[in-house]
Every structure is written in structure tokens, then in C-alpha cells.
Image (cartoon, rainbow over the protein chains, first blue to last red):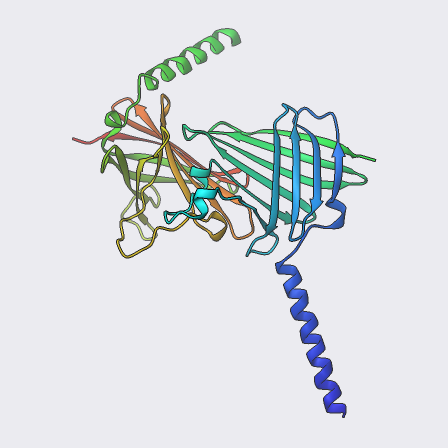
Length: 168
Length: 185
């Protein structure tokens, strides 16, 4: 009986460890990062992060009026998130090679490190020039701090830092 | 004194810009070059000198290929233990609907064309030719989700080509290479 109890206990511990490992692989964001924040920043004016069935959706409104909205799901790599890509009708039934980031004109992904969410947005123009945004999003008290590093083509990047307040 | 120096520097910069902006074409860059480059590790501050051989040549229809060999010198010499030699080549073809170039995969009739998947470790490589030179980009998402961007700029300079390279790790420039190679006869 004692031996059986030990085996059962080991199995339960093993199952818990397995589930825990699975949770790490399919990680989501800390609760603190979900919400809606606004501010008067010149680079970023608003950030909304919502839960989705399998991951999260991020909405960013830039100071120049441009908007970014991406749904992310856990990628194969831990703490890394892939953007959900919608494929066109003809692309779904095409036998040709699926489009790559250059042909799609963009590539988005995200990662979580030390409580900071990093969202990356790489956008290609028709002439091969590009824009690469790296948004570092972190909670500080009730506020959200956002550091945007924007690189255009081969030019030196421009870094801006904003603090956004929660929307009541 | 300072304004005069500023004007002089500005004149030099404008003169160099004008020289390289005189309509850079692939054909004007095609050729074989040999020269030197200085590598600076911006994290450690370490500097290395290397010899480089570069060949820029046509590839299929309207594409191009770059082949280069780097020899990292030891105490300024290549006949010393510890010398490193590296050969690299990459080919590009024109993008179907743009004025830039995409990496041309090696032809393999037995392999199905596959999607480029950066989150699985596939690099995105492309090239852009503009009035300031030929830019080759190599973009990679690392295992931990950070990115690595390598930028090679080759441009006409004196009797050869200049090289400017940066390796950017998640937004920080960690390595910079500057060099010059003369056209060989």
C-alpha cells in the first residue's frame, strides 16, 4: 500500500511537472500587462493588450496617427510569440510557395523577458527599404512605459520613451 | 576657427556624397577587388585587421552575386598561427514586383520550395541599390526572440569600393567594419 501510494505520488508530481513545463512552453503574458493605456506621447499615444483564446492581441496607436494591431500566439520557442497571419483566399488554395515576409510586406513577432513585453514590427516598402519598430512595454506602478526604437533603412535608429496612464 | 572647420568638413562630406551619388549601377560595381578592413567589436572595444577579396558579378538574368574571402590577420600578418580564413557567397535575383533584390536559393530540383520562416531560424536576405551604394541585408530572429540585423554597404570609392558593415543585436550595434578594396586588373 505504501509502495502504491509512493508510485501514485510520483505520478502526480510527474504530471504536475509535465503540465508546468507545458505551461512554460505555451506561456502567456503576466496579468499586469493586460489593459488599456493612453497618453500624450509624441511617439506612442495608446496601447491596448487583450487576452485571446490562445494568446493576446496588441493594439498600438502611434503619435503620427499610424496604427498597429497584431494577434500573437505562442511560438515553438519559449517566451516568443508569433503573429497570426491571415492568408488570402487564393493563397490558401494555391500550390505555389507560400509568401514570405518580403512578399507579404511585413513580419511581426513578440517576446517576453524579465516582465517586459517586446513587440517587433518589420515593414517592407516596394523598393526594399524597411522600417523596424521595437516596442519595449513594461508596467511601472499603475502606468505603462513604452520605449520605441524605430529604425528606417540603414539610418541610425530613433529612440523615444513614453509613459501611458491606465484608462479607467 | 570652428565655423571654418565646420565648413571644411561639410565640403568634404558633400564632395564624397557627390562622388558616390553619381548613379551607382550594378554594372559599375561588377568586378574583382582586394583590400583591407578594420573590424571593431563595439562591446569589448577589440580591433582586428583583415584582408578581404571581393568579387561582384552578374547572376542569371539581372541578378548579382557577391563572393568574398576574409583573412583575419595575426599581428598584422597572415602567416602566423591563429590566422582565420572565411569564404562566403550569396546570390540575389530581382524581386518580382519591386526594385530591389531577394536572395536566390540554390537550385535543387528535388526540394520543394518552402516558405521562409524567420521564427524557425530562417534568415531573410535582401539587397537594395540606391545612389549611396549597394546594401545587402541579412535579418535573423534568434532563439530567444531577439533579432540580429547585418547591413553591408558597398559603394564606389576612388579606384575601387568601400565597405561599411554593421551587426545590430536587438537594436544595439555590436560590430562595425570599415574597409576599402581596389579593383584588380
